[in-house]
Amino acid sequence: MKINNRLSSIREYHFKGIDDIKNKLIAEGKEITDLGIGDPDIEVHKDIIKGLIESLRYDDFNRYPPYDGINGLKKAIIKYYREIFQVSLDMDEVLILIGSKEGISNIIPAVCDIGDYVIVPNPRYPVYEMCSYIWGCKPYKVPLKEKNNYLIDLSNVPDVIRKRSKLMIVNYPNNPTGATADKKFYDEILKYCVENGIVLCNDSAYNEIIREGKEPISLLQVDLKKQAVEFGTFSKTFNMTGFRIGYAVGNREVLKALLNVKSNLDSSQFKPIQYSAIRALSIDRDYVNSIRKIYDDRRKIAESILNEKGISFYKGDGTFYIWCKVPNNYTTDEWCQELLSLYGIIVTPGYAFGDLGHGCFRIALTKGKGVIYKSLNKLKVYN
Ligand SMILES: Cc1ncc(COP(=O)(O)O)c(C=O)c1O
Image 1 (cartoon, helix red, strand yellow):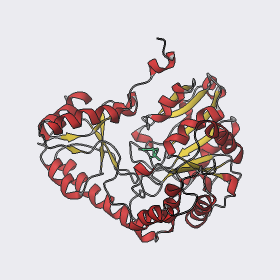
Image 2 (cartoon, rainbow, N blue to C red; image 1 turned 135 degrees about the horizontal axis):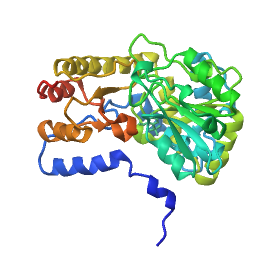
Image 3 (cartoon, rainbow, N blue to C red; image 1 turned 30 degrees about the vertical axis):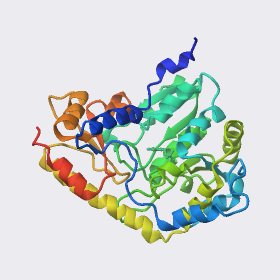
Image 4 (cartoon, helix red, strand yellow; image 1 turned 120 degrees about the vertical axis):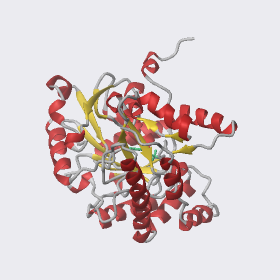
């Protein structure tokens, strides 16, 4: 049997392999704390559940939804962008997605031809690289460096790549580093992309997961002509990872191309999930602040223990991740293995996000503060 050659460049999704190891250890009776995947443990707000259940009584709940999403959800996202970011959007500047992962993948064939380059960060959310290969494109990986606060530095893109690139994907607040971007940075990369005919996308999955007191920002705040696209999701802010609902906003031509791809691949998300997302956006903003406080408290505890244990880390303002350095004298694998075998802790090895992640590991603050305290406190002092 012959399999697509391009799949030889593609690894199994890291977290699928980890699930298999975890399930085996649990079956053997080991106590495991999973600080690996970014799947929040926080309860889903009751209004979201209510929205889901109530919409099951609508006459047409079981029918095909519109390909671009239901109007009510598009309007709710328009209102959200207006109130939070002071950005106004038209209906055709919003597209509903089956989770943002889906849209991030499908925007590649929407914009690029086979063989085109996609500029992506290194380290990065793995989907940008893997889906570039799946769709027959070439990811060009630009280093993110701590000395630049993990902001992408485009002076590292050679002219020949710049000319052959059609798409750039950035991600702030950033997974895995926790770094955030400011409007000046967005302005600079937008100028670069516009000058070079490259479609800029910001994956803003963690736009609301920022330290308390910080302002959420959007790429579209500097993109007055709507030349770029921003992806968002309900997964992280509203603990809806399994609900699979996200959106893309911004340039209408690009969204039309994305819808063209999507309408041939899927038929949008189950309507009740879309209705529950409308409810999510109508919850009082105190809720979002309470989520930030939960992660801030967890972060404080984790950071203080890591300091005591001699493990250094980047102090970012966003996401619920901590990007840490592997202690001296360990390879990344030896270290992650030691955390699992001695302390029962699963973390993500930095190389799961690209080769520049070697020597680093990521902690997800997706367990309660008691669990974080108990598990990290088991570590001896390193370095
Ligand atoms: C940076 C980033 N973008 C997108 C996603 C995907 O989110 P969704 O659940 O909307 O597909 C994730 C999930 O971990 C992520 O970390």
